[in-house]
Length: 60
Image: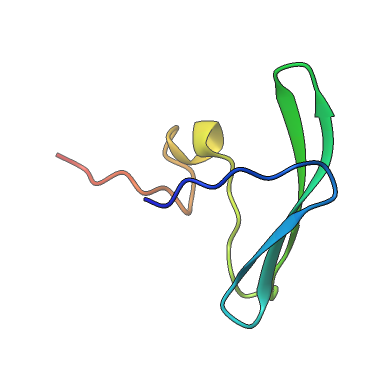
């Protein structure tokens, strides 16, 4: 895992077609804007952990 420090309005590019930008910081909450092709699923961790259609969980 790569951990980076960014300030408000700064961005990170992932490959040629994904961009993550810090839009706002309010206390301990950070608002991100993600630009990516529509065919790349973007799921919040708390949603994907519940076993949604794009869940990373494997049945055991």
